[in-house]
Amino acid sequence: MKVLIVGSGGREHAIATSVAKSPKVDKIYCAPGNAGIGQIAECVPIGAMEFEKLVAFAKEKAIDLTIIGMDDPLVCGVVDAFEAEGLRVFGPRKNAAILEGSKAFSKDLMKKYDIPTAAYENFDNAEEALAYLEKADFPIVLKADGLALGKGVLICNTLEEAKEGVKSIMLDKQFGTAGNRMVIEEFMTGREVSVLSFVDGKTIKTMTSAQDHKRALDGDQGLNTGGMGTFSPSPFYTKEVDEFCKKYVYQKTVDAMAAEGRPFTGIIFFGLMLTPKGPKVLEYNARFGDPEAQVVLPRMKNDIIDVMEACIDGKLDTIDLQFEDNAAVCVVLASEGYPVKYDKGLEIRGLENFEDKDGYYVFHAGTAMKDGKIVTNGGRVLGVTAKGKDLKEARANAYAATKWIDFDNKYCRSDIGKAIDEA
Ligand code: AMP
Ligand code: GLY
Image 1 (cartoon, rainbow, N blue to C red):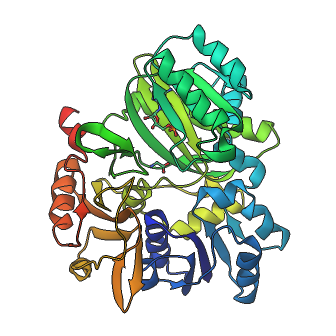
Image 2: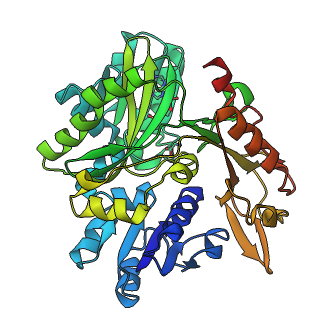
């Protein structure tokens, strides 16, 4: 069969790597893809938001299955555009992708269906938000309602900071129209865990757990980024936590969406915080996490095509989702200066060291081809993933493999997975 993947980051490279393993697949296209994806798929120069062109391409090439990797097109209805033309596509429709597209929607859903999350209020005007802050406890968390490239969350320690935050989100529109509404919520403490799941509208199967490192610098210092590294499984995601979430979070979310007339098909990513009062939902995403996908998918035993087709056909209950009994760590190689200012176009050397190395992967996040060479083309450049029999071994393997690669201004955190020492 012919598969089209929509997106251009490390997540889509990880998806493409899993798809390429399926014996059912003869040909993979990726729009727009990147230099690494181009080694296993044919990249086509169509942007992820160019729905008409994507649909026309899928028809012209008689694509059997399209997989949407990114949030933006999902939230804007790319799945509906494919389905309207009778094309098979993996991902939630627009009315379900709102689970990620509107934080106010997802908070109201959790409140209505009694799914544990931080206490909150939604606001659609700045005066009311500012008045609310006068009586609030600090720290407090401000969230722009819409998509903001993972940057629309401000943790404010004082009333002054919070007032500035409301102004920048709602009045100065720092995150554009994402800030037309906002959520103000209680600050929670605890460890964060990412749990990704396959969903077919009614059945949910969760994948192995993972943990991301969102801050740019060691010790969780510095600015928030798209993610500097991940490990899987999380030793903090215990059997008790899993049982709690199975009872109070996962199926309840899927049932709530169905009850609202918004059946969800695709990936639900549960961002959880393990608070002293039990697990609570920090956020939902309607797609694989990035770089969570880079540690979760390499450990999945199933043929990803079988699982995705079962989701589309409403037959996920027939799938026995299985993961290897090992661990994986992904260390992101970034360009020094990310997420603020960094150079692009720097030649990357050593990628060939990963060829034929079992259990090692180099997923391209921001790369491009220039004059026949692979060069940096983004802040997050590569995700170096290694497996190991346990997290310690996987971490040692991943850090060893980061040394196989070289480019000017190469930067990575040195403490990805360090938390496992405390487990
Ligand atoms: P989100 O995009 O909602 O996951 O928020 C991004 C990050 O902000 C999360 O991964 C947390 O580290 C932090 N965060 C979000 N909401 C809260 C909260 N209520 N309390 C503490 N930290 C939070
Ligand atoms: N790693 C966090 C995300 O994909 O949103």
